[in-house]
Length: 252
Ligand code: OAD
Image: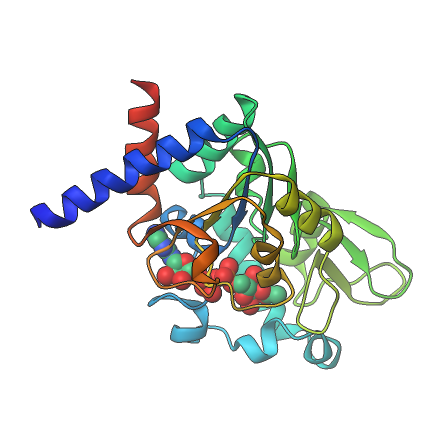
């Protein structure tokens, strides 16, 4: 136990040193940064792909969605209902403060929960989109989050006035990710890059760390698929516990 604490203390100090030395920082985040907010991840022990509370093969597949959008909308109703209760975590706030201090240039996220923006982050590249806007799959009419939310709880499958199905602007398997070039560019520009709460297995997003020329800090409980030679520090503990300690030390 003492051994673990010493290791953890070392990691905090190393992280602070890397932040101090860095001129320009960016972060790449995944579902693990939001589990402490109460949103399950995908591949962690209580992840959606493990518990299979929703069938991921049906819920997030664009071809299935066009055949039968109901499984997706069951998930969407729960997710949007959950959003009323969720708040950004320590790690979301840590990153927004790093941006405010001028060191962090931006965040590339795979998450669709918008918790980075709720924490105050400004430059957030949402590779897998978000629920902020939705579009009619036929006439492309745009629907705000509020308008979509209303329809979501009024109709089993939200439809447009033209009769076609509405789809939130999130990226399904079988669709192109967003801001790929911009995200790769950001990763290539910085000298310190955080990889937080992602298993790094879903491509092309998982390719982003490969563009990093600087040092990488990985904060993730399970091992992450990134080339070892690129990693300056690996922290395999709870994301919020770690960033709480880093914040406390930085503010002292
Ligand atoms: P994953 O579920 O694959 O990975 C989340 C990682 O976070 C896991 O390795 C967990 O061990 C770790 N983790 C969870 N909570 C943690 C905590 N409190 N402290 C430390 N580590 C923690 O999620 P992503 O990598 O984001 O795509 O998944 C990528 C994509 O797969 C998603 O964007 C989604 C999914 O299919 C689409 O739907 C298109």
